[in-house]
Image 1 (cartoon, rainbow over the protein chains, first blue to last red):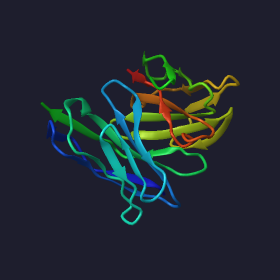
Image 2 (cartoon, each protein chain N blue to C red; image 1 turned 180 degrees about the vertical axis):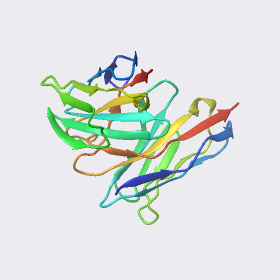
Image 3 (cartoon, rainbow over the protein chains, first blue to last red; image 1 turned 45 degrees about the horizontal axis):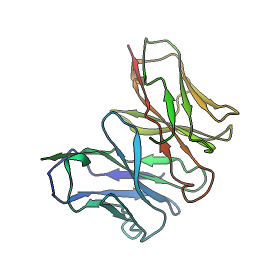
Image 4 (cartoon, chains in turn blue, yellow; image 1 turned 60 degrees about the horizontal axis):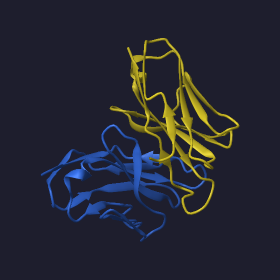
Amino acid sequence: GNSVTQMEGPVTLSEEAFLTINCTYTATGYPSLFWYVQYPGEGLQLLLKATKADDKGSNKGFEATYRKETTSFHLEKGSVQVSDSAVYFCALSTSGTYKYIFGTGTRLKVLA
Amino acid sequence: DSGVTQTPKHLITATGQRVTLRCSPRSGDLSVYWYQQSLDQGLQFLIQYYNGEERAKGNILERFSAQQFPDLHSELNLSSLELGDSALYFCASSPAGGLSYNEQFFGPGTRLTVL
């Protein structure tokens, strides 16, 4: 079946450090890939998405590239801020129902 | 604000009881999804409705049921509650088409505590 594997957290970084959160997937067909962010006490917000191979999603300084050859969708940001502290979820959906399969989430803590 | 509303925000109840969680999707969205977020299971898809009809089922227990009404709001019913049902329950909605057809917009969640 389809699945998403995310790197274990928590990840602790200093402000302005470079961030990478790894995400790999297993899916039949051609899934769409997403990164969602969950701030404390809130629901999930879409951060970025990519719908086909080699697409790059970007938003608020975050980027992720859909790599079909490595079945990956790693999240990166060049310079993190304290306000980026949150839990990040990688997810995939396939055509038909478009239900999401989520990774386990990676907690990011950025220290000033 | 995603435009998806969920009530109540918090729910505390006892084992064996029955509760109903309510979700109102964004205006115009036809699909509603329910997810359960717990520490041990992570975020799990429960069930999807599209324009009043059940579309897909995930890891939803037989004690749980859902429906979507003609005005497109949805309710998730949880019965014979157990301690392990304590979790955050999210509702999400998505449009039928357009550029955002495969995006889901999440509500703030209902935190259920079973004592």
